[in-house]
Image (cartoon, rainbow, N blue to C red):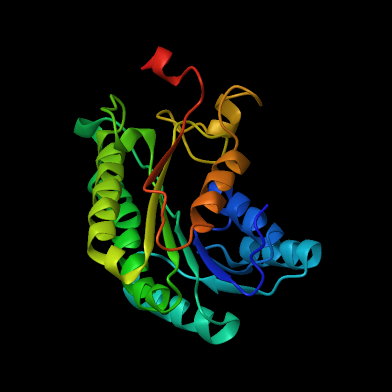
Length: 245
């Protein structure tokens, strides 16, 4: 593991799944952690856990990434509470509905706003802080953001957007020594719902697909990069993924 003493990392969607695994992984490296999600109780429980296990400072920020003012306040309070921000993990995301013809306006707008607007607001507010530290921002993309997906094209389109935004952002801020990485998992055993609404952690048995801790390892590797180097993109797929394309 990489030593991260005196570093501060903000993780969105931190209350479960890849976000929670990333919090545990980066805290184990010694970083101070800001945890952002809507579920305050779950955030506080996780924050207490990693503080006790690893002796790191934590900062709980209950917020909805669709609320630009709340995201701005979260970044500001993180820097005020924990110090200079060296890493941000843009993880908050969800999927609603599946079939385009049956998708409701609410399902479409919720998926669109959380996955794209949330990523934009988080990046926009974090960039000035990351510029001060030559830090890294890591976006959680998806296999669905690189290849056509027959179920839930709307979710897939938001992940194509996230990937395109991240790549172009890297071009814009690379001269400022800000590292930008996209980590693309395929199926991960989390609470994330499959096309029929069943959580992936129930669809797949342990050992069948990627675990959230494995994605967190990739995120931690990206966060460890120092100027002039960055990791542009990391794909974390189950080994038989292309056999089921």
